[in-house]
Image 1 (cartoon, rainbow, N blue to C red):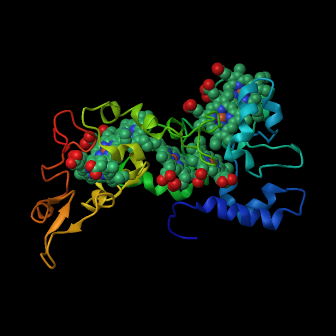
Image 2 (image 1 turned 60 degrees about the vertical axis):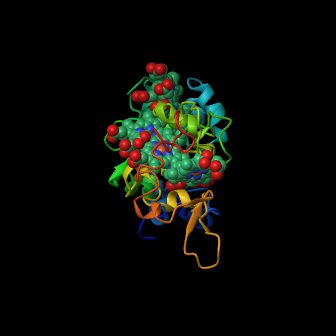
Image 3 (image 1 turned 90 degrees about the vertical axis):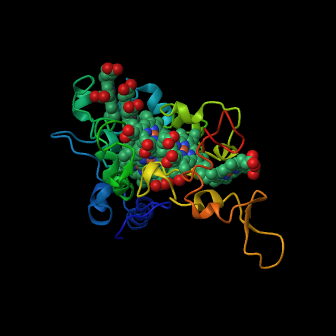
Length: 270
Ligand code: HEC
Ligand code: HEC
Ligand code: HEC
Ligand code: HEC
Ligand code: HEC
Ligand code: HEC
Ligand code: HEC
């Protein structure tokens, strides 16, 4: 389990492993996890212990109600003391002192919007993505994970099993209005979502691109050989691109600069 992974997520894999090994016991989650999944430790609050989600219900009723729809509600964070799910405390830390104090902002409770490290301690596989040369400035404190992910499952339109807002372009457009505004000449690629061209966390390529060369565009705009066998000419959209493809990427060579859509030209130019 070295190196960083994407997609399947190592958290899930090791979680299943720890469940398999611990499932028969009365869910002594903490004891098991120190051996098999140290990453599933809840964050530490000095002197506090786990109390379970039910202890939050009176004061944060709505959040506790919607929480079962969140993937995080499936975390096996239980102890003999709580008996019921303690998923809230996986992110906010053990709540006994917060509850005893009658609650309150900043009172014996953690908030990952101020400490993204809490998320990253479990999701270590995405940590490195936020250190790549082109990245969303989460570690710098300029934005939070929860501006893109709903931690409590409040968004009922979200895709099953995921935390990312369903209307992905709107999530991105909340901060990048220029790229989502209506255009005279729309680029249909955007209908598939910003992430057909951009990675959300971080990239080695400038502007968070998934690829830095013309393959970014050619995955949808197929190259076809020109008329006549062995002509050696390359056509895209019935236009001879043989010379043009040597001039740079489709968008940096001055040909299709307005990749997000254009107000002046159907060929996507500014
Ligand atoms: C996956 C991690 C995670 C889990 C699990 C989680 N929360 Fe949160 N919680 C967050 C984040 C992140 C924020 C900050 C949200 C934001 O900035 O919009 C937050 C914010 C809050 C707030 C403050 C809301 C406000 O208006 O500022 C409360 C209260 C809260 N959570 C309670 C709970 C309760 C109760 C549960 C269990 C039912 C729970 N949380 C489960 C991550 C989590
Ligand atoms: C006795 C009522 C009460 C109980 C029980 C309670 N809270 Fe709170 N909590 C509050 C109040 C009041 C606030 C402040 C809310 C505000 O200012 O909008 C708060 C704030 C929070 C915040 C935001 C903290 C911050 O600094 O941003 C989180 C997170 C939170 N509670 C989590 C929990 C969790 C998890 C539980 C269960 C283990 C819980 N609370 C139980 C009353 C309570
Ligand atoms: C205690 C460990 C833990 C913490 C803390 C935690 N997560 Fe998770 N998270 C998990 C596990 C385990 C899953 C997989 C749940 C499943 O698939 O059933 C998951 C699922 C997710 C998913 C869905 C992944 C997918 O492939 O669909 C996202 C997104 C996510 N978490 C983001 C966050 C964010 C953002 C935070 C902080 C606000 C956070 N997590 C805090 C353990 C954690
Ligand atoms: C700019 C929006 C944005 C921010 C900020 C963001 N994410 Fe994501 N995240 C996404 C999107 C979009 C996906 C889905 C990627 C996909 O399906 O290809 C995703 C996927 C994930 C996944 C699933 C595994 C994966 O890599 O596909 C995890 C876990 C996750 N994010 C955790 C986090 C954590 C933790 C933070 C904060 C440290 C965070 N994200 C900040 C947008 C964001
Ligand atoms: C909460 C606000 C916010 C959200 C939501 C958001 N971004 Fe960003 N985005 C930023 C910030 C801040 C930067 C860094 C800008 C800088 O460093 O000057 C950035 C940078 C970028 C860049 C690189 C810009 C460049 O010039 O290198 C791209 C591309 C980008 N975001 C795409 C997306 C996509 C795609 C989504 C949705 C998955 C998204 N953003 C969601 C705030 C946001
Ligand atoms: C067809 C591929 C593609 C799609 C889809 C796409 N982008 Fe881009 N985006 C690019 C390319 C290529 C660049 C780099 C432009 C450059 O370097 O001049 C870029 C640059 C950016 C930048 C940096 C500022 C700029 O305009 O140069 C931001 C921010 C951005 N995109 C946000 C988004 C958002 C938000 C979405 C979804 C609404 C999106 N992009 C969809 C290809 C795409
Ligand atoms: C997700 C698929 C997809 C990706 C990736 C994509 N496009 Fe498109 N693009 C389309 C679709 C669909 C159309 C509209 C149908 C057509 O004209 O082929 C289109 C239309 C265009 C047009 C207008 C063609 C015309 O004559 O009206 C240009 C120019 C264009 N794309 C350039 C690019 C560039 C440059 C890139 C890479 C930055 C790119 N596309 C990436 C799907 C995509």
